[in-house]
Length: 149
Image (cartoon, rainbow, N blue to C red; front, top):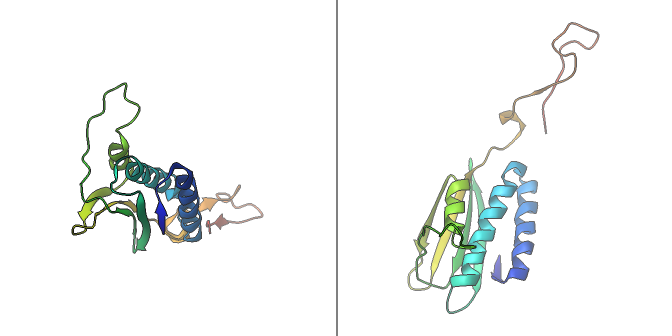
């Protein structure tokens, strides 16, 4: 999706990504993906030049979710150690902490894409079954388990 990285739009993008992850049954990734895209869009808003336009992509391939933000500023971001009293400057460190991997991909002279990945556990078959009360006994209900959908 293409947008201007303005504070008023960041919440909308988080909601769109959350809805898509729910559609893909990846609810456990919503918080991490929303935090990561918030940090990336905030970086575009604060640092990108000459404009604040960008493209957000989310991609699910096999067992990996990739979120990327492409802007038109060719300058590559760096992870800086923020002062302990600073109120900003920790975005990329947060992304590194909550993601499986992250990086920056230059796109010629037209900008860059900053991305992060999250491990995508899909489908109920990867979740352990939940035991129903009494399922470990030989009572009237027998051995019943419910597998989450």
